[in-house]
Amino acid sequence: MLGLKTDWSLDVLPRYFTLEDYEGGVARWCPGCGDHGVLSAVQRICRDEQLLPEKTVCVSGIGCSSRFPHYMHTYGFHGLHGRALPVACGIKARRPDLTIWVATGDGDCCSIGAGHWIHAIRYNMDMVVMLFDNNIYGLTKKQTSPTTHRGFRTNTHPDGAWLPPLNPAESTLGFTNVSFVAKTVDWNPPHVLATLRAAYEHRGTSFVHIAQRCPQYTAGVFEEAQRDPTLVLLLKDEKGIPVDPGVDRIFTNQMAHDPSDLGAALEVARREDVIPIGLLYQNAKRPLYDAFCQKGLEMTVEEKLEALEGELDRFAI
Ligand code: SF4
Image 1: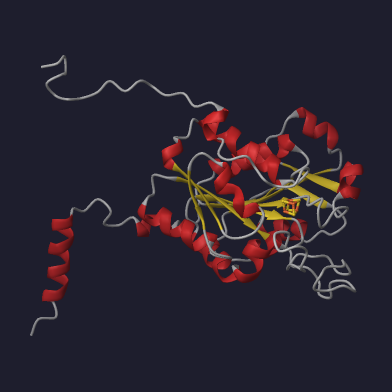
Image 2 (image 1 turned 60 degrees about the vertical axis):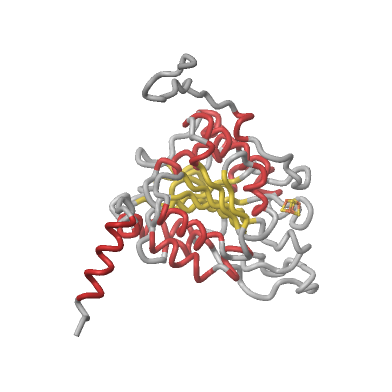
């Protein structure tokens, strides 16, 4: 009938996705903002891995970097301030088949979202968490954030920030069940790409701390490290993040670091004389909460009702 097959099946042509297929709206970040480069790296990984756009979700909270989902042509959830991680965990719990990228900032994650940060790391569900750290609340125009350096003048501390800044990588390494912590700098695109690729390949919560330039409000914070690459310390190990020869040539200040050594990772993360980049810590054997959350997903409604009735019957008098 009308040339249709009797079994109604359709021949779906294999799809190939180009970079453009992952591009959402035009990014409205300021020119020179470090967020642009990270967005390009994620789009490139999606293209290289041929991730299905309809099976990819970008989740964010509030802040400049949290506009990320709008710029990806995938599913997205631009949530409430500090709430990117619980949303992402919820999605993963019911849809383990989806690839999840979380975009959060130093204000979003390390301040109002800090409680969620601790527990998302402990849950260790399979997702990539990108912490865009520009040391400031950019979207709300220059308030002190948890990572603002002491003495840096902001609208909330015009005479300079008072408290020592929080160190997101060090903190994350201290959380129970941590399984992957890496650091990168937005001004070296090949290193950003290699780091995010390693994070994507890790099964568990991959926490990537990104030193992110904000020319609008914290211009100059990373200028010295940009001018003098020896202020960046490249971590090297065969279990670490493989990098292009070009990255090796730029970052000549290098250190051997075994990413399975949590104590050594904490020591490196605490260094203030340099910005360590690379894989600080990885433990692929940590338990994943995904496995628990996915229980019952395959059950039909009837099976669920039957199981529920069975449970209730246990308390029948
Ligand atoms: Fe980027 Fe800063 Fe502009 Fe926000 S204010 S878009 S972080 S440069």
